Length: 143
Image 1 (cartoon, one colour):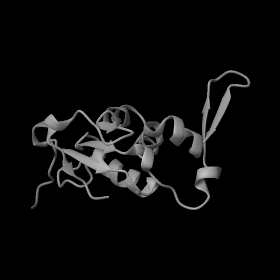
Image 2 (image 1 turned 135 degrees about the vertical axis):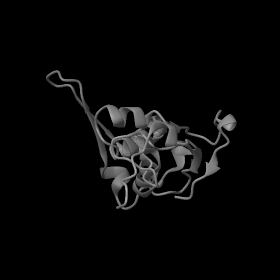
Image 3 (image 1 turned 90 degrees about the vertical axis):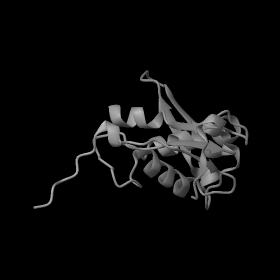
Image 4 (image 1 turned 135 degrees about the horizontal axis):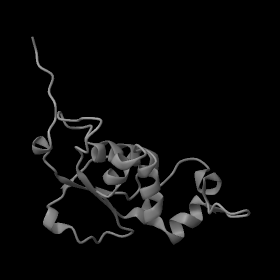
């Protein structure tokens, strides 16, 4: 009989990756980043554990979307009060808060609940090409 492998906390080895978002398609890049954050690229992946690695994204302000999405894509948030719905287009969001565009795209591909909230903390996004994570020795992640 073969035994089922059960991942333990001691089996998890963390690594950091760096992604240059310049001229990358937002959705495809976010899907790859979400998979790395979850740890789906590792043989020790477990759906109930945070087995993933950290990801640093640079040049977030230069990410691309296809088609007419710059004009048609809308980010909505609701305060909970009557008349509290706020809508921002992708174009304005990218101009004013470029890091939020990538963070939201990745976060919405992660599970909800405590596991997703812990996983998104390993994502660091920067609008330009400067970051302060050299001590993590990030390797380049091809997206």
